[in-house]
Amino acid sequence: MNEQNDEISLKELIEKGKEWWDYLLSKWKVIVLAGVIGAALGLTYSFIKKPVYTATLSFAMEDEKGGGLGGALGLASSFGLDLGGSGGGAFSASNLTELFKSRSMVEQTLLSPVVVNDKTMSLAEMYIQNKEWREKWEKKPKLAKLEFVPNARREEFSRVQDSVMGKIYENLLKESLSVVQKDKKISIINIDVASENELFSKYFCEALAKEVSDFYVETKSRKARENMLILERQTDSIRRELNGAITGVAVANDNTFNLNPALNVRRTPSARRQVDVQANTAILTELVKQTELAKVTLRKETPLIQVIDRPILPLAKEKFGKAKGIVLGGILAGFLTVLVLIIRKILKSILN
View (cartoon, rainbow, N blue to C red):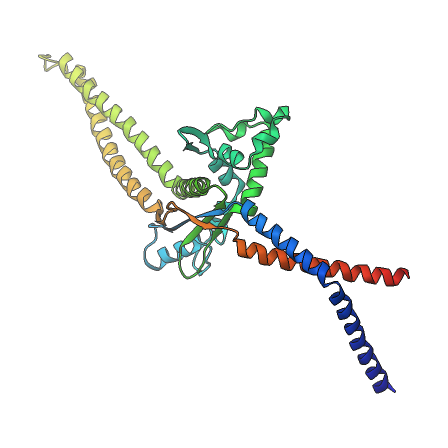
């Protein structure tokens, strides 16, 4: 009995499929017409759609403070690789690649100055012009006079400026910016910036790399730099004291010139100054040595950032081709038409 039901069900299924096929075949003119219209729309889109230019910059970072295996572990850690033997830090794991996508770094980069058509502007202004937002803002008083001056102080922005910068950041992160380490065995990071403006892609890519690079170097070498500056200030202070003590010895000697040998108490200031000279000389010698060692330490603590490839004009261009537009437009329109016809027939059969 079950076998008979299965056979009947299979037969009904085949008949139902044939019925649907005949129905769609009877509508072939509508489907073909929709496909032609879709192909025409796809072709039109290929003419309207602007090409996308992609700027790529690749670089490597090397930390000289650890040699051999220690240096290799430090370099691997800075690019998000955990090979053990590392205590972690601000740039461990995937923090470095995420730093490029952070709002702070991106917004600071957007305030970098660039020269376009002999006019200096910020990258944020360049982005706004590319998106033609100014035309949309003409009837909005709060936005009409909005301006992003190059190298402006981010903390002084108004609420409206914060909102616009946030929108630009979201768009860049969603549509334009990509930071990847293609192979974990190779400590090289690639930055890709894609936009419809070739110059913006290039300028933003290079400015972002510089901004993150400066921040990285400053953070990694901050302690060593502060230590060196303190030692330099102490050295300058002791040097001034030593010069004053030497001058004091000379003055005291002048005051005791041709002094009666029996009046030794008058020679006390000169003797005291001489002790100051000797003490300050010893201190200065040690501070100079420590300052030079601090300079060497700073050089070791400062990571080396080596740019391997920079974006070079003309950039790689991706254009929505005419053939692609015709094929995709025709297939999509045809599929949607078939879907609409099927839904229409099902609804009609239910209502009847």
